[in-house]
Image 1 (cartoon, helix red, strand yellow):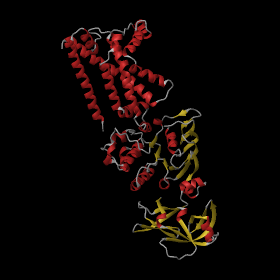
Image 2: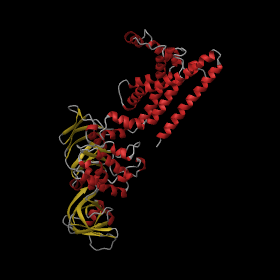
Image 3: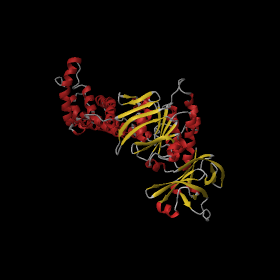
Image 4: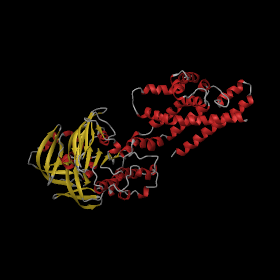
Length: 222
Length: 356
């Protein structure tokens, strides 16, 4: 493993973990709203959230490219008013990973929230707990297994993301190159030995993530 | 205390709950068959459910008023709720469950101080345990204590004894009575068990099909059902305060006024009891002395005969008011008339003694 390969591994692990943390509050809020509340437009939001799961990742990437480009509605605003660019920087990698892994967290957390007996939350309220305290002390701990499973899934999805990332972040060595992008490029260039080393690292990372989740889940089981 | 439930209209799956009642006693039983809307009513009082129309006032505090849009959130109502499934938090220990709503500081009523509640309900040995390691009766006590520790102004109990078997019921009832007496806290207790209502409640609100059928002091409602429907739920035609004078070999001698009856001794040690006898368990006989296994033979006089469909409700004076339900042909065969002297026979197990 040379320095460049280590940089790729470190960057991929770090940005995947960051994307999982970034989507955690959004994902939990969405999952809770979908599991516990009825509101107009719920089914539309439900569909939108799951869309990246079923659409070709490259197509999702194209949508993000149009939205966050300097002439796009969001990218244009960020560039003109905040002098802030997203595309083809590490932030684009973070954006692609977050969008692609969000559905997995939301689906998993939503099922977990739905399985929490609403009576427990109601009784917590009669004991003087407000909504936020009920959420933090009853709902989330009781749904913890599902939430952790969702986070692991999201992290794993982020580690392997390819299509959307290459569309909006490119494959800039030392800047936006991730494990998947680097392996693809190495194989294209005939550098099989480098590709195999990165493959080995991918296996180790995936194994560690799944193993850690199993440990966590086992400890949570009463 | 006074709990005012006015203009309550809540559509449920099979009927609409429509309630207009004021509760003033310390312990009030919401009494009625399963699926009568009793739990929904408790949920409304606790603010866990919203109704299209409701006015709920506890003492001088308006908790819900749909007319003005006032709705005090559940967490600010100060109403303790022990649901039928108890809803102990499975991921927390007994101690953490107890402390969840526990108020501390100088402002709280010392009656609801941790140590006092723990000692009244005898849960000190359970505190270090996990909730999942408790027995049914222990869970019940922990749930009661948890609700009390939040210093509620009103305690809602949903079928507190329904999930317990008979011996356990006998163990939990004294705790409920202790809560009533020690914490001086008003309780609203949903039940479909008349013995439970009799043991605990000063007042009864009978609900069926979403409507209040009758409300009033327990004895009055049970003795003088307002209509046949209430009479059907109540099920006991005769209900009299009595005294156990002797217990021997599992049999209790109980006296009502001057009349003595033999009944099965109740599981709870008590001398003051209600004597409950169903109308269909009372037999009538013209001749006084024929040999039979029946222990209770009471000379009585017929005060009134009231036909009820295929049956006749016979009102007797046996030293206390006694009611018998017999068939019309049976009545005709004996040629019963008002004022006749007759012997009433009641088998020992048909006499229920309920501690009062």
